[in-house]
Image 1 (tube, one colour):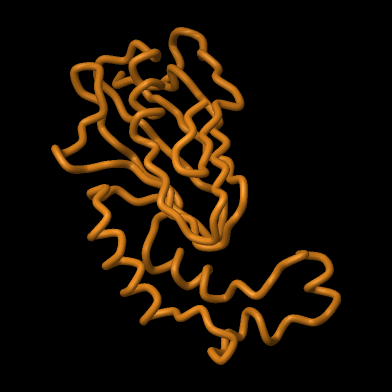
Image 2: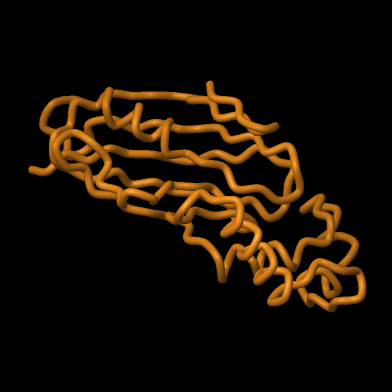
Length: 172
């Protein structure tokens, strides 16, 4: 478990696959975000997973199966995060006055089934600012990231708990 500023990262499962499989390790992570919007640095947890996999050359594949958050690789720096939040607010504002068909065109029955609050802005932000999946090279037993790069989950509709699937593939 890793806890940083109201967020929590837990390993839900970790499975070592049999020799001969292209997947060395498969793991599920639970990421709890305590605020409406946040960026969670996953790099340390992913580096630990890769180190424990014993793979020298391969790929880490990370998948986020949610529609109002997503994955990104960039610099983890407060000024940049503020700039991105500002840009996304201009592009997809979160105000009651702004119209999102996703919010306004749902029937009461659809709202009941989905138990959703108005979150059209969150869907738009995730679509334009993140990816549902990432593949990161592993070389010399480590994630191959640039000096300033971090792997992050960007949340736009919290507080929520999200689940991520990570698989360490070995080069065959």
